[in-house]
Image (cartoon, rainbow, N blue to C red; front, side):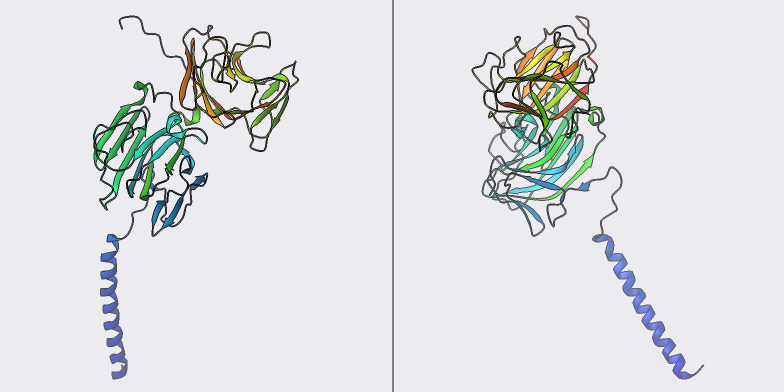
Length: 403
């Protein structure tokens, strides 16, 4: 071997050694910045820090992404909001927020597409320290349950608040800055027990600026998602049939909603149901009259009706259990989409419209299997239904007195 070859080999060996040291330094430093691979059940990011992928603006919601932060500019104002594309049932949600200049807002979950979201679904309030816990303080379930303590930072503090919401029906736990501010059994609260168990997660634009970051979610096992059955495919009337006597015009509109126009008649499910939870969005024109029948057998044996008539001075305004219990309030703006929920269990019927229980009875006729029937009952105007779905339930076992 020549001297030149030996010299080149020594240079190559030294270079290799230096490269190995450099690589060891890089590998040793990498774990400080590297993110571990996500496993099933781990937290998953809902916000990528770059854009609004996975989110949908409802209305002219003022949300933008800048400098890795999700910013609510407040330009949209109430009732606009930003929602996930997915719906969730049980989960642990974590995020950090900072309200600017005394801003307020809310984190929605189990949220519907239409109606007053803070009352139909859940709204955990955001904001800064208010001085004492109230039903609209940070950490409150808005208008329903005040937080157990004041845990939010004042808006002048440059730090971000840390919020965690754990929803595992019927248990709801909210932690703000490391302090538990809600620890509830939802079924024990009259204002909460009828709220949906499945819906969107959203951020409210209340017309004031709030910064968000580190939004992530861990999915918990769902309990009822698979039990819900859609009653309409948004395209045609598969699974439905019209009544024999029918002068109404039935169609599916551009939104995929069932539209009943003019005339009189019924559109009836092929399937039969007895005890159930039922949901649908409804919308009607002025002077329209319609309804939804349950435990229907025939036109001469119609079961009972939940009325649709958006007239506050009607004998049976929207939400009434027709000719049995009058809805004493109509908590929505006529002509807009609104969620109607019906809870039917043996002789008990509860009707909830736009987040308010408007009618309730425990003296319904004896339970029986029957169809669900949509009614059009006016010569003028129209009624629409969309998002119809049903969940069959088993009645609760009777408990003997004193047990």
